[in-house]
Image 1 (cartoon, one colour):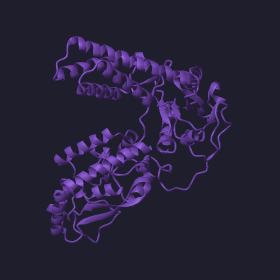
Image 2: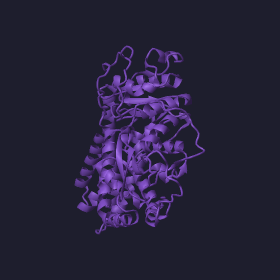
Image 3: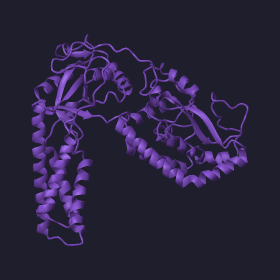
Image 4: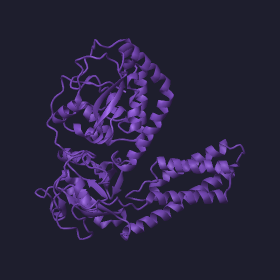
Length: 491
């Protein structure tokens, strides 16, 4: 809930906008070059064919079913009270989910899961036993621990064996594109070819032919990294693995930010010094570590979750704050006269314009313009206007923009068309802010990117928010906004 910022006088121009189409933006269609000969191990899509949704081996559902069956058997053969058994089952599933034990992984091993499973079962059985109104004998507790561990581990062992067998026989596999043309890409491709148990089937490589190593050159299906999304779609790719040097990072970032929900591939990155990396968050193919990147906000499910969250929270706040908004409207009417609501065209998702609502804080003037920044010491502001700005009460009508679907609770702050055009020509990545709905507050705002601050820095924060979005991140930003408003930092 922040007022529009003034561009920093010390900001440096970093280059012209590349003109990359933004998902959802109405732009002319671009001709797509055809790929080279199809890979012998699987058909390619015809040019222009619709990309199929990413296939999965349903590991999440199978593992959840396995654990549920194990806990049901435990409930039947070693009964506690219904409340205790239900609490234990819910606790185990919740902790396992939080520890990513239901995520599909490239390497499936019960030994990898063993520390988390043992610690969780021991702790939760002890907690349930101690909190139960009916005391449990120590022998009964030990029986519960032993049975729970035996049932869960044996169920997971059987599940992992079945999934690995399906992968080896190619009944379950993910068509994989390796981005890179060097020795790491070649080694990873060879290891995946030799180890089908990981479930990844390499259909080709993406990289420049001129400097590609021999093992990669004959399997290149594209050379332009910026066309990653198109290449993945044309080749029905489900998984993309990045094995890039630092000099190609800008191209791959451009390619990933310009893709949309029609290219729903899972993304892995091979980090630098990966041989020395020992992290619980990493998958491994032999000695090569791979990190699965966060699912982008542009995918359909995250967008729907965010929209549901926005509507629910906005509806609650509109109901609770209705008396406050009525009082603010009355005070503004007394100070500035007719025209309590300020309406201004802003640029929203996909570059589409919308009308933004605010309570008017300035008296009307003949010099009002959508092409000038508000002065820092505005003479037309009165006591009411200054108060509602300092407390961000002037932003409350934007809750109706959220309910209408123009805005979100959290996102990049929307800007006027004149400045969007100006900044888009001046700052790299500026137009990528429009991949999502603009927000009432945002990651840039709560990190001090307001007032006389750099447009370039705000652009970096906004795009980092989109690339790393989660519902929890939205909640953190909202909490930081509330704190800032109460501390008087929202003006």
